[in-house]
Image 1 (cartoon, rainbow, N blue to C red):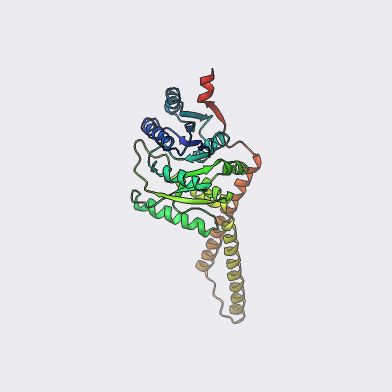
Image 2: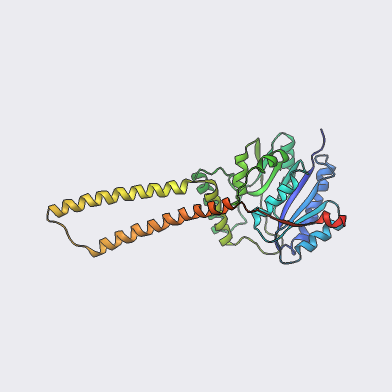
Length: 320
């Protein structure tokens, strides 16, 4: 059996502080796995520059010139973490037998790759990196993250609990995954839809080595909402149920009003009337907002705009 070619896909956005540190760790891991006879010497570390505004692309280019195991692609502009990961995976699907996507910040335990490759050699096509605990997170982040995974599952979306975007995927899976044409991406919820044999590898997440997180609360909430609306239509069913329930209450209230009127017990109440109007109006606005979110996603999907555009590749520069 030939040794598989591994591409480690690493999205980078303004990572000039951490990239010089973690790049050496990724290279060492490639060499370690090759020395153990688990992967081919033709394996590579593929950096994806997501429209960085600092020296990230220059550093990637310098790394590629120093060692052939480093290669990189650059997007024409910043398109977001999920699109950057997708660009790297699609670039690697015809060159590598397996890919491992991981963030550049050094928080994910790089040694878990050994177990991921072992699981692949045992027949698994997808290996999810799953956090064993969240001790490094604040209470708020831990509570909201765990609640989010539970909410997704309650909404009918198939996701792996405490899994982000640290995963091994075989070329066979990527070939099938390339048929998924969604513009609104939530990769951690899309790969389970592909199927194939899968397993999980557990690891502890560390503090960021250098620099600042590029996922503040606003982006995290946006990603969470994208995950729910991209993978499930249950919110629409929920608001349908709410509308049905409120309609039933309104119908009962009308009957009660007529009974009170004919029994001469009706009382004109301004406060109760305003309260009911405000309540129903608020529910209607929420329902319109949820419907509008789905309509907006349909609007973006039917345009069929490219999900990423690659402007530069390090190996093209070498050929000039």
